Image (cartoon, rainbow, N blue to C red; front, side, top):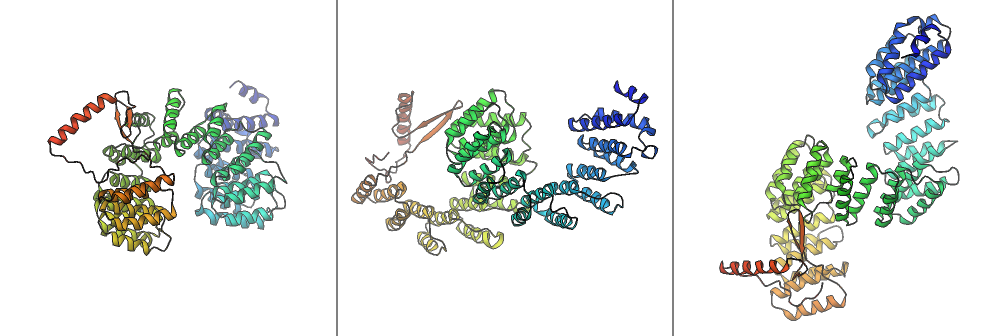
Length: 624
C-alpha cells in the first residue's frame, strides 16, 4: 500500500482521520485483507496510536472504533473482541460497535451482556444509538420482555422525545405483534416523520389489520409525503383484503411520485393485482419492468398459479430458465405448487434435477413442493424418497405425506404415518386432520375417523372447519351409515354448508338411496341453487332405479335454471406431452387410430366377461 510509508514519515491528525475513513470503507465493502493490513500498520506503530501518548484522544479513539467496526462488518467478530479488550479507554461508540457486532451475528445474549457491562461502566453511558441498535434485534415475541425493559430505560433516560428511538420502539413492538404498545408509542410521540408513520402502517398490514393500515395511510397524507417503503407497506394491506379500488388509487400515487421503478414497489403492485384477480395488470407491470429480481418473478409465478393459469406459470418458468436467469428456492417452490394430475411428470423430474444441481434440496419449502408434485403426478414412491432424504421437516412435510397416502388409497398407512409424526414431535394442524379424515373415509375406518375428529379440539385445541365435517359425512356415507351421517349433520353447532350437503348427496348416490338423496339435494339447492352436482347426482340416482320421469324432470329444471354440468376430462402423458380428452372427443389428430384401438379393447373386455354398469348413464343429457 503506497500511502503507508508517507504516513509513517509525516503523521498528523488529518492522517488519523484518513485511516479511520479507510477502515470504514474496508468494513462497508468487505475488504478484510485491506482492513487487517491497516491493523498491521497500527500494531507496528504503537506510539502513534496510544491514547496516553497524545492529546488528540478523539481521533485516535476513532481509529480503534473504526477497526472494531471493520472486523464486525467483515464477519470477524472474534478479532473485534480482541481489539476491544486491548483498549484501555472506551467511549459510547466503542460499546455500541461491540453490541451491534454481537447482534449482527445473532449472539443476542452476548450483545445484552456488553450492554450490561456498558451500563456498569463509570465512563461511558448509553445513548439513543445504543437503544435503537438493541431494539432492531428484538424481532420476535420471545424478546418482548427486552423491548419493555428498553422502553423503561428510554423513559427514565429522557429519550422518549427522540424520533429515532420512538421509531425503533414502534418497529420492535410491531414485529412482536404487540400492536397496542406500538400504537401507544406512536400516539405519544410529539414529532413524527415518514419512518414513524410507515412503521405503524407496515406493522398493521403485516399483522392482518389491513383496513386499519389503509385508514392510517389516508391520515398520514395530511402530514408527510410517503416514501417507497410506505407504498410497499400499504400495497401489502390492499393485497390482504383484495382492496382493488384502493390499490389502483395507490398505484396512481406511486406514478405521480415517480418511484414506480423501485423493485419492491413493482413486486408489491404485482402481488396486489394478482390477489385481486387482475392478472393482465400484474403481467403488464412484469413485462414493462426494466429490472427483475427473484422476488418479482416469484410473485408473478405464484399469481399465475393462484388465478388458474397453471400452464402459463410453467411456460414462464421454462422461459426464465432458458433465459439464463438465476433460479432460487422461492421460484422453484412457487412453480412446484402448480403441478397437479394433468401436469407433465417429465417436467417435474427436470425441475427436481435442477433442484439437485442448484443444491436447493435442503430447503424445506422445495422439499415439500417435490413431495406434493410427485404425489399429484401419480409417483408417490418418489414422494416417499424425497421425504426420507429431508434433513429438516415441518408440519407441511408430514401433512403432504399423509395427504399423499390418502390420495393414493393407502388409508391405514396414512394413520400409521400420523403416529410417526406424533413420535417425531411435529405438531398437527387442521390440514393434518383433513387428510386423515379423508384417509379414513376411503379406508372405511369410521371409528378411527370419529376419534380423530374428537382429538382435534380435545387434545390439540383445533376447531373443526366445514371441510372436516364434510369429510366425516362422506366417511359415514361411504360406510353405508347414511342415517348416522344425517344425524351428525343435524347435531352440528353451525349451519351446514355446501360441502356437507354435497358429501351426503354423493354418498346417497353411491348407495342408491333416493330418499336420502332428495333430502340432501333439496338442502343443497337452498344454499347453492346454481350447483350442478345436485341435479346430476339426483339424475344418477333416478337412472339407477329406472325412474325416468323423475330423471327427466330434474334435467329439465336444470336446463331452465341455466345450470351447466362441467365437462369431464381424461388425460395421459406420452413422451412428456399431455393429451386430454372429453366424451366422444374427435379433436385429437390421432382420433381415428385411438377409436380403433378402443374398439379392439372393448371386444377383448367382452370376451373376458366384463359387463358395463349402465345404471349411472345419463342418456341424451346435453348439458355441457
